[in-house]
Image (tube, rainbow, N blue to C red; front, side, top):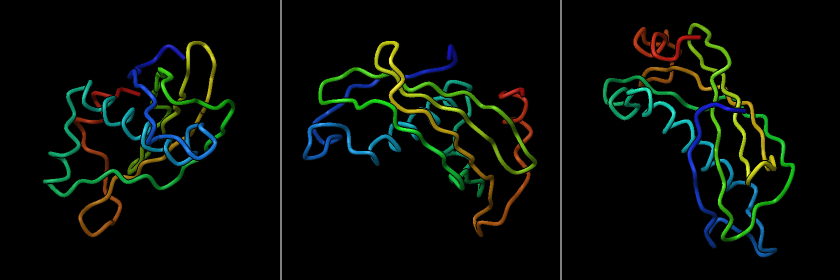
Length: 130
């Protein structure tokens, strides 16, 4: 995957008693990848939220292939695959070097403050461009 990515380091608080990254910690890394993807496009999700437009995760499918350990450097890749009227579908990978540690398909809905689906903003559609 040669898409947008961020680089991160694995810290002790990411790991479990076995010394490997706790499975739920990967969700934080994936979230950070999506957040930075939007920021890289000039889209401020915090500003959208202030205006009543929120992008919660509504579906997540994740495969754990290899463990990361304390001190590892990782890259979190993020690529949008599809946009619906009120959703964005992402494919994400977490790698250490060329090793794929995790891959995930994530669907984020576009909702208002009442958590009712709303149409994706035109600015977002144009900047993502798929």
